[in-house]
Each structure stands twice: as structure tokens, then as C-alpha cells.
Image 1: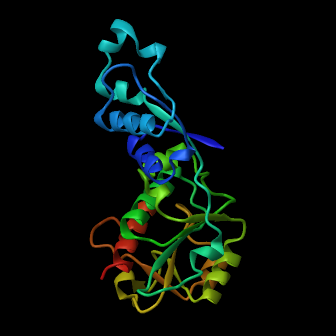
Image 2: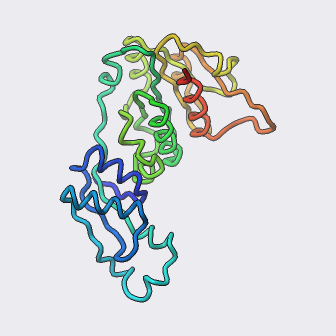
Length: 244
């Protein structure tokens, strides 16, 4: 299946990691942004078709377009990134200790994309997503991830509980996240491999998921607002769990 990406940084990451999966690049005929110009140059070098014949952006009308409108006319078609088999993600639990993520029925593709961007930033070793009741990995998720989808192994599973049990058998400890947890994420020890589980935006973690957790943590609020967006909370927890 192919995706249409409109973030040049997502396309640049795909060109760097798997240029054979970039099928086509479409640029406005005049003055694309610097990042899209780089995309076009790399695509041509790799022998990827680059189209600049967008009829809707030609002639005097194009010269009147604002910069953001010219940029939005650019896009690329790429194949979906291949998933990584679940068991392969933790087949070699080498030191130092690492952190994995599991997303329990997240439904907003912007949250999923933002989490992948943070996961790539913090060196998360892998991500597991549920297939059912979850946001599909669309072009929107790839664009928000800004290249993160290319750098973090991931797998979509039909049964998250089974995947968590397999991870526990392999030697990972499961860490749930809940605003009702008694312990702050800063109190979690770093002397083992952890899989951090992020719950649904509205309902949090499902009961069966919670039952499989070895520990549960929260982010203690410091101000008047008592909760965070799922992707922001995930980023804060990743920062805490990967600190040296």
C-alpha cells in the first residue's frame, strides 16, 4: 500500500533509509522550499520520478501563491514501511538496558505520529501497536513523525496481551502509565529492560493490560492542570526512562 506524504522531512528520512520505496515526488514548478528542493535533488540522483508539471500551480496564478500554499503543493508517494516481527524486537537484549513502547488503542494519528517522533529522538528500541480500535498508520502519522517512522522498529498486533506476555517471557518488564498510579515515573528504577505502555486518549489502559503490568507510574502535575495529552505524556515518560 502506498502513502502520500507532505512533510519533506518525512520524505528525506525515507530517501535516506529506503529509497527503493519512494515511488514519486511531485514539486511545484517554481521555487519549492529548501527542504523540498533537497528532496527533489536526492530523488533525481536515486532515479526516482520527479514531477513538476502541476497545472494548478502554473502561470501568473502561481506567482500570487503564498509560500505555505506553494509548499503544500509538494508531496511524495511512498510505500508503507515494513513491520518488524514482534519477537525480533527483543531477540537480543543486550546491555545497556533499553526501553520499548506499546500503544494500547490510541486513536488519533497525530498522537501516534508525535510518539514515533519522540521515540526516534529518545532511542526507543521498538513500538507495538494494536490493530483494532487504533489509528491506522496513514500519511498523517508519517508526516507528524517527521522521519520517526523510518528509525524505530514497529509491529501491529491483534492481541496486545499476548505480545506483552511474550515480552515478559523474553525478559522485559511491563510499565503501565496512569494518572492514578501511586508512583511517579521518576521513581522507576533503570536496572532492567522496560516496555512502557501508553493507553487510549480517553479511557487509558484496558483492564487486561493493567493486569499484565509489573509496575504502573504517573507524571505528577506541578500546576493547575492535572493531565497531559497522550503524546506529550509519552514524551515526558520516555525522557524520564531513558535518562542516563
